[in-house]
Image 1 (cartoon, rainbow, N blue to C red):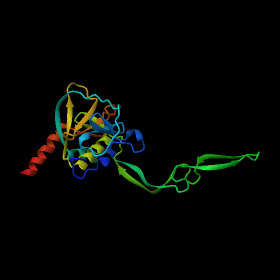
Image 2: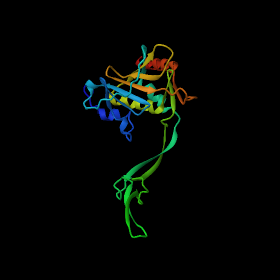
Image 3: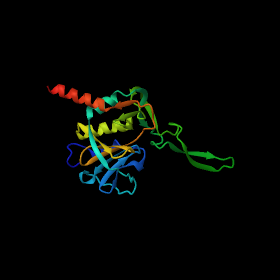
Image 4: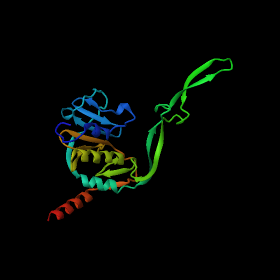
Length: 231
């Protein structure tokens, strides 16, 4: 990306897309390149992007009038994420099926009683139509993406928080600005990374109780701790 040292924009956008769904690939919306999988979306000014992207008329998100911004340290986001409840989840490596070349289907031959030979595509008998095999199965304790966290009144999913954290690290940022809108409505959480990039996370306020929390009290305690370190 132009103006960002050693930042691979493809890897940055990959944090916000569903790799198995072609409709979530990065696209050009007006003067910004955007990428989203439905719950989180990143906006990057096209002037700093290296790649070429297809224009779209989708994603007409309406932004509310801004009242103020609150700077949240990256460390506080990381600590909040790491303190979320963890569950045991299965991980594995995938090996493509050589019999069907990863398609999950092979051509079957059937001969009718009348002697007619019929050819049809059916599930591969070697991989049972999966197209691949699971190898090196392992159990890992990790934060489920569906967990929720209340960030100063804006409730987002753990998956969205993880993407935000990873994006900040990739971009070399140590903090992010939470945009507070005028009025009482909080349709989504908007984070301003810098003048070129913003990240929007869908609200999850209908989930209660929350699994984690970042409060103004925690923000104040963090500020005090940082001042004590300087002394």
